[in-house]
Image 1 (tube, rainbow, N blue to C red):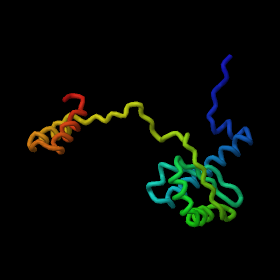
Image 2 (tube, rainbow, N blue to C red; image 1 turned 135 degrees about the vertical axis):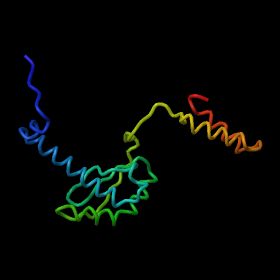
Image 3 (cartoon, rainbow, N blue to C red; image 1 turned 90 degrees about the horizontal axis):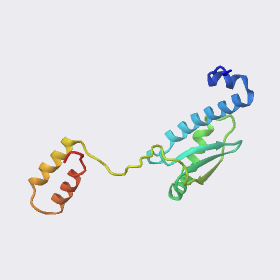
Image 4 (cartoon, rainbow, N blue to C red; image 1 turned 60 degrees about the vertical axis):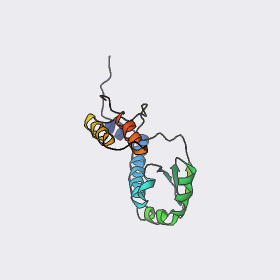
Length: 147
Protein backbone atom coordinates (compact mmCIF):
# COMPACT_ATOMS: atom_id res chain seq x y z
CA UNK A 1 0.00 0.00 0.00
CA UNK A 2 1.46 3.35 -1.02
CA UNK A 3 1.91 6.12 1.53
CA UNK A 4 0.08 9.35 0.94
CA UNK A 5 2.42 12.12 -0.17
CA UNK A 6 2.48 15.14 2.10
CA UNK A 7 3.70 18.64 1.36
CA UNK A 8 7.21 19.29 2.69
CA UNK A 9 5.92 22.11 4.90
CA UNK A 10 3.57 19.72 6.69
CA UNK A 11 6.39 17.24 7.30
CA UNK A 12 8.65 19.98 8.66
CA UNK A 13 5.94 21.23 11.00
CA UNK A 14 5.47 17.74 12.43
CA UNK A 15 9.21 17.16 13.02
CA UNK A 16 10.79 19.75 15.32
CA UNK A 17 14.36 19.07 14.13
CA UNK A 18 13.39 19.50 10.49
CA UNK A 19 11.46 22.62 11.40
CA UNK A 20 14.50 24.13 13.15
CA UNK A 21 16.74 23.18 10.25
CA UNK A 22 14.35 24.72 7.73
CA UNK A 23 14.15 27.94 9.73
CA UNK A 24 17.96 28.10 9.98
CA UNK A 25 18.35 27.60 6.23
CA UNK A 26 15.79 30.32 5.51
CA UNK A 27 17.57 32.68 7.92
CA UNK A 28 20.97 31.99 6.33
CA UNK A 29 19.46 32.61 2.88
CA UNK A 30 18.06 35.96 4.05
CA UNK A 31 21.43 36.94 5.54
CA UNK A 32 23.19 35.80 2.38
CA UNK A 33 21.03 38.21 0.37
CA UNK A 34 21.88 41.02 2.79
CA UNK A 35 25.58 40.16 2.47
CA UNK A 36 25.42 40.05 -1.34
CA UNK A 37 23.83 43.51 -1.39
CA UNK A 38 26.59 44.89 0.84
CA UNK A 39 29.38 43.54 -1.37
CA UNK A 40 30.61 44.93 -4.69
CA UNK A 41 28.77 43.32 -7.61
CA UNK A 42 31.76 41.27 -8.83
CA UNK A 43 31.70 39.20 -5.62
CA UNK A 44 28.14 37.91 -5.99
CA UNK A 45 28.89 34.85 -8.10
CA UNK A 46 32.06 33.95 -6.20
CA UNK A 47 31.01 33.86 -2.56
CA UNK A 48 28.15 32.94 -0.26
CA UNK A 49 27.41 33.03 3.44
CA UNK A 50 28.10 29.59 4.90
CA UNK A 51 27.41 30.04 8.61
CA UNK A 52 26.75 32.55 11.36
CA UNK A 53 27.77 31.85 14.95
CA UNK A 54 27.47 33.95 18.09
CA UNK A 55 30.35 36.28 17.27
CA UNK A 56 31.52 35.59 13.72
CA UNK A 57 30.45 34.85 10.18
CA UNK A 58 31.87 32.29 7.78
CA UNK A 59 31.92 32.96 4.04
CA UNK A 60 32.88 30.45 1.35
CA UNK A 61 34.49 31.66 -1.85
CA UNK A 62 35.66 29.83 -4.94
CA UNK A 63 39.23 31.17 -5.16
CA UNK A 64 41.97 32.70 -3.02
CA UNK A 65 42.01 36.09 -4.72
CA UNK A 66 38.38 36.72 -3.80
CA UNK A 67 39.12 35.48 -0.28
CA UNK A 68 41.83 38.13 0.09
CA UNK A 69 39.56 40.85 -1.23
CA UNK A 70 36.73 39.73 1.05
CA UNK A 71 38.94 40.12 4.11
CA UNK A 72 39.25 43.82 3.30
CA UNK A 73 35.45 44.01 3.38
CA UNK A 74 35.29 42.52 6.91
CA UNK A 75 34.34 45.72 8.80
CA UNK A 76 31.51 46.54 6.39
CA UNK A 77 30.19 42.97 6.33
CA UNK A 78 30.29 42.56 10.11
CA UNK A 79 28.51 45.87 10.62
CA UNK A 80 25.87 45.17 7.96
CA UNK A 81 25.10 41.65 9.15
CA UNK A 82 25.12 42.71 12.82
CA UNK A 83 22.16 44.97 12.05
CA UNK A 84 20.15 41.84 11.15
CA UNK A 85 21.31 39.62 14.03
CA UNK A 86 20.45 39.54 17.73
CA UNK A 87 24.15 39.81 18.70
CA UNK A 88 26.84 41.80 16.90
CA UNK A 89 29.42 39.85 14.92
CA UNK A 90 33.00 41.08 15.00
CA UNK A 91 34.95 38.41 13.17
CA UNK A 92 34.92 37.31 9.54
CA UNK A 93 36.26 33.92 8.50
CA UNK A 94 36.74 33.27 4.79
CA UNK A 95 37.23 29.75 3.47
CA UNK A 96 38.22 28.85 -0.06
CA UNK A 97 36.07 26.05 -1.40
CA UNK A 98 37.04 25.30 -4.97
CA UNK A 99 34.37 22.62 -5.25
CA UNK A 100 31.49 25.09 -5.02
CA UNK A 101 29.17 24.16 -7.86
CA UNK A 102 28.79 26.94 -10.42
CA UNK A 103 25.35 28.47 -10.78
CA UNK A 104 24.95 27.11 -14.28
CA UNK A 105 27.07 24.45 -15.87
CA UNK A 106 27.20 23.86 -19.57
CA UNK A 107 29.09 21.04 -21.21
CA UNK A 108 29.24 22.88 -24.53
CA UNK A 109 31.71 25.76 -24.38
CA UNK A 110 31.31 26.69 -28.05
CA UNK A 111 29.29 29.84 -28.52
CA UNK A 112 26.88 29.95 -31.45
CA UNK A 113 25.38 33.05 -32.98
CA UNK A 114 21.95 33.70 -34.37
CA UNK A 115 21.92 33.54 -38.16
CA UNK A 116 21.17 37.26 -38.61
CA UNK A 117 24.03 38.26 -36.31
CA UNK A 118 26.42 35.99 -38.21
CA UNK A 119 25.25 37.44 -41.53
CA UNK A 120 25.82 40.98 -40.26
CA UNK A 121 29.31 40.08 -39.08
CA UNK A 122 30.11 38.45 -42.41
CA UNK A 123 28.85 41.50 -44.35
CA UNK A 124 30.99 43.76 -42.18
CA UNK A 125 34.02 41.52 -42.74
CA UNK A 126 33.39 41.54 -46.50
CA UNK A 127 33.47 45.33 -46.54
CA UNK A 128 36.89 45.48 -44.84
CA UNK A 129 40.32 45.18 -46.37
CA UNK A 130 42.41 42.13 -45.48
CA UNK A 131 43.71 42.30 -41.94
CA UNK A 132 43.35 41.10 -38.39
CA UNK A 133 39.90 42.64 -37.88
CA UNK A 134 38.51 41.06 -41.05
CA UNK A 135 39.89 37.65 -40.05
CA UNK A 136 38.47 37.94 -36.54
CA UNK A 137 35.02 38.92 -37.81
CA UNK A 138 34.99 36.02 -40.28
CA UNK A 139 35.90 33.56 -37.54
CA UNK A 140 33.20 34.98 -35.30
CA UNK A 141 30.63 34.78 -38.11
CA UNK A 142 31.43 31.08 -38.58
CA UNK A 143 30.05 30.33 -35.10
CA UNK A 144 26.54 30.34 -36.51
CA UNK A 145 24.84 27.02 -37.16
CA UNK A 146 23.69 28.04 -40.66
CA UNK A 147 26.80 29.63 -42.19
